[in-house]
Image 1: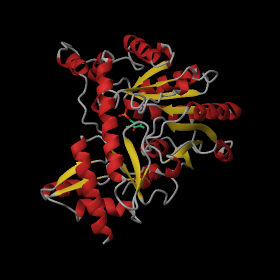
Image 2 (image 1 turned 180 degrees about the horizontal axis):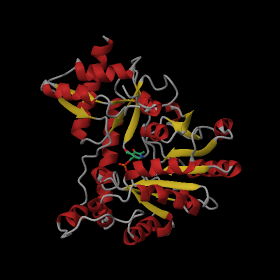
Image 3 (image 1 turned 45 degrees about the horizontal axis):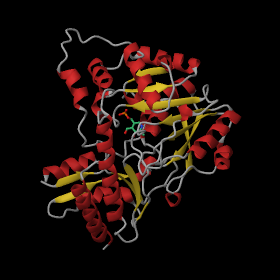
Image 4 (image 1 turned 45 degrees about the vertical axis):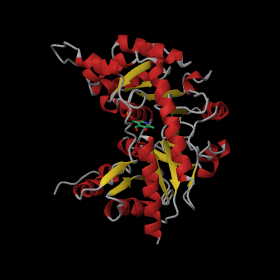
Amino acid sequence: MPKISQKGIQMPESPIRKLVPFSEAAKKRGIKIYPLNIGQPDIKTPAVALNAVKNNSLEILAYARSEGSEAYREKLTQYYSRNNIHVSAADIIVTTGGSEALSFTLGSITDAGDEVIIPEPFYANYNGFSVANNTKVVPIVSSIDTGFALPAIEEFEKLITPKTKAILICNPGNPTGYLYSKEEIEKLKILVLKHDLFLIADEVYREFVYDGNTHNSIMSLNGLDQHAIMIDSVSKRYSMCGARIGCVISKNTAFIQTVLKFAQARLSSPTYALIASEAALETPQSYFDEVITEYVARRDILISELNKIPNLKVSTPKGAFYCIVELPVADADDFAQWMLEKFEDNNETIMVAPASGFYSTPNAGKNQIRIAYVLNQKSLIRSVQLLNLALTQYNG
Ligand SMILES: Cc1ncc(COP(=O)(O)O)c(C=O)c1O
């Protein structure tokens, strides 16, 4: 039989989606499942974006420009400038989701075996994009006890080798909810300049910052023009995950020209989704104010309910809509599957993402799960009640 590639074999399963067969089976048994595993917000997409597609009278659904239209990229620069990020249309390549932006970035800066240092736990698909691009992930552990703050810069420095090409951070963090401070970003800047590395920041959760904190983009740092690469997406900002539009931004022209070649090879991002994304830029500030208020309320209720469970550890997220929860179980993968296969209360259970897939250090995060607080407050309260009951039964 013809053989599958080593790369294909090494491609990791998504920890967020791998329990789907068990949840589908549970649904067939009539069980209601609260999905805390996936970052699919239940928030409505802005009407202005949906209407732009609905009211469109296109007669040919043509290809778009590979890098995204001039008009859309110009409007993006205005959005960024309101966020203290000053870039020009030429610095932006529009992509099919932040996912493609990440993949094109690794494709553009790494050769086989080149290394990228990433604080873990990290967004699990970084593993997948790295395998696909033959990039080696070098993890650096951040701890739940510090709320997943940036590890000491000396620890980063110890990991730098001649193969290191970049440091990749996610700010605010998925799955940690950590928001890097200005000082932490400045420390990374000094390090990447010293070793002439790229600093990649995945800022797709920029709007989701709580408690009066401000988001510090790497694109606002002086002196980092040749080194900074920013990843962005409309998925979470406008609750438009299905549009599949994102972008990659850098002032490094050699990098952008290289990304453009990857973009040309896939021709263009989907035209209707581009129309929706461009219109979404007209979303009023009141939309975001309401969304942020709702997420803060969800976070607060979730964390206070979780803290009532004995022997459980969680740190309060400062941004995004996820948290890592350390459970009194040895194997959270087994526990998460058990909740779908063997547990129910009043015909209800929960689906969570085992956190081991958010680490690349073997056996790290074995007793942790990630919870996405993308459900309404009542559902979150019920979900934590189910988690508590499940823990008691599982450990009983
Ligand atoms: C941190 C992070 N980066 C990138 C992505 C990819 O987003 P998309 O491809 O939907 O733009 C996600 C999606 O959940 C994410 O959480």
